[in-house]
Amino acid sequence: MTDNGEEEKAYWKKWEKACPYVRNGACCDIAAGECCGATSTTTTTTTTTTTTPATTTTTPATTTTTPATTTTTPATTTTTTTTTPATDVNKDGGGGGDPHFARWGQAHDSFHGECDLVMIHSKQFHNGAGFDLHARTKIQDYFSYIETAALRVGENVLEFYNDHFYMNGFKFTPEDLPLTFGGEYKYTIENGRVEAGKNAKFYQYYKVDLHQDSSMMFKFYKQYLTIDISGNANDFSDAAGLLGEYHTGAMITRDGHVMTDFNEFGFEWQVHPEDNFIFRESRAPQLPYEMCRMPTAARPSRRLRNSEMIDEAREACAHVKEGSFQLCVDDVVTVGDAGIATLW
Image (cartoon, rainbow, N blue to C red; front, top):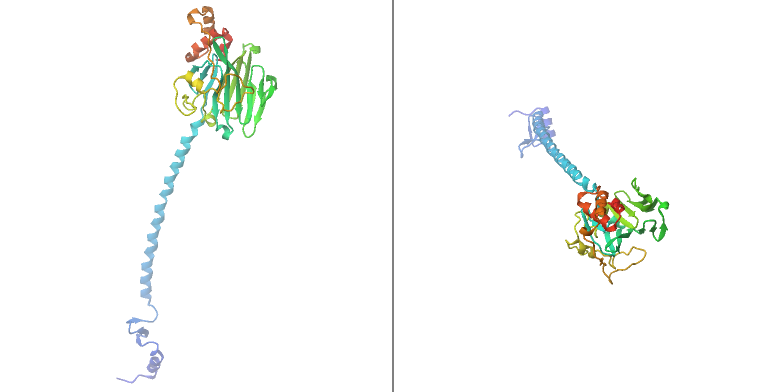
């Protein structure tokens, strides 16, 4: 074994303590069997190549999330379409003549009792302001008719007669119209148009607009009153009374039962003490003391009625739809005045 040269000795003296094992000029750890010097270029290249595909694997995960947003969109479209048309169409109701009452969207039925009647009661009308329509009927000989009506809208009460009306106790005449009242919801009373060819001194029409969706007409021919109402579900969906349940016109009692006899239904909706009493003055009969009075005089049979009057009645009622035509004819013959046919 040859002696190490001076240069080799200096090399070993420098690295012996720090590197117990040196191979090819690189300081190594003999226990681990690995080199401790700088990482070779070959090893670095291998590490870089392995890392590159990891980024590629993450990219498709974002693509999978995109269709979830597309699925939500049609659900909103379906909801909007379903709710739109619910309140577009109004329903008609009212009463008049001998008298006959038309429940919401239904044909006329007759109730001849003399008393105060709840035609419509709504608690929810216009955000809970409330609505009441009462009719006061009167017996004349062997028939009866609507003499006057009282209307409550919120805190305002109106009472109608053929040549004047009252609002909150103050008297007004048709010359004072139009008149607007209300707060958040505005209501207007104006003179209704009397059809051409009629003698205006026998007629007085009051038109009441109930804000936007509903309206009423109080039509007098002499002392006989007919009430027409065009009501929207926005205003009257919870309505009860002689005009029935709003959506079906069914005869629903105060405690929610269904009736089938309109005469009994009339007695059911006589104004009770617990109802809002909205007429200025009380008039008998009134519950709890007396029920509606019925006419006691016998009605003449159709066979004994004046044939000329019947012919006149048929001509006067020619404009009335088939379902109500005979009721119109009976009203004209009973009252003996063809002018009452014009209220139909």
